[in-house]
Amino acid sequence: MPGGRSTPWPIGPTGSTLYVGSPGQRYMAVMANAQSGSVQAVGFASAANVGGTDPVQNADDSDGPWVRIPTSGLAGAAVNTGFTFNGVRRDWDPEFYGRIKTGTPVNDVRYWVGLFSGTPVLSPTPAVSLAAFRFDTSAGDQRWKFCAGAGGALTCTDTGIGIAESLAYTFAITCGAGDCVGSINGNVVARHAPSDNLPSADTNLFYHTGIRPLANGNYTFLFGRVTILHR
Image 1 (cartoon, one colour):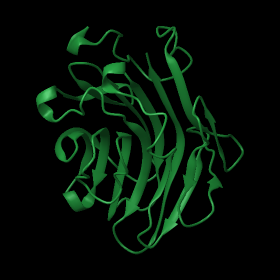
Image 2: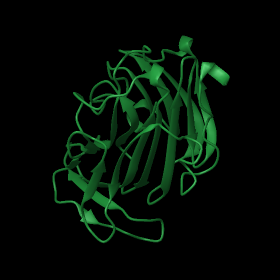
Image 3: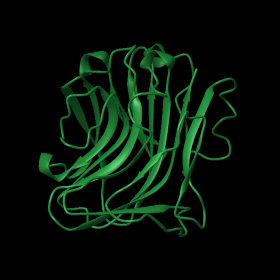
């Protein structure tokens, strides 16, 4: 396979056929509960951390089930299980799938969605290892960027996919021995090779999905799900 990967790259959107070609892989997921302002976790050693400064809310709509996570001031809002357990490594051929919906506003805000060795929210260039999508107005981002980082050095590629309020996105990140590939809504948008500051093959990476307001105000984002597969 390209990049030394032992399993195929994802083709098309996630859905009922996602796991047909992946027998025997470990499966972990966190997903919004329909008709409820809560999430459930499968395959993780601990429940997900969910929240901002204000109570979460159910926000189901025609795009699917969602948990709306509001925050105010300069406090972050996120979904993760911390950065001390249930990590994956690049040499495990991990596959990350995340579905979010932008809230309001999308100016003066930082989004990070993907896999990280530590919390990314305080900076557009965090000193952690990562393979993730970023939108950060403080960094001059006008579209989603796909980034790879190795403990501080960061390489980001413009995906060509714009951002607007109240839009749903399905992100995919697939990593192997030779690269990490990023997809948005079923289409490959960027690839990073080892020379692009990929995380070390044996670095533990953990999922994180969240925002950080960059100006005082009331902000929200909607969380749908995160799915992680690895061998």
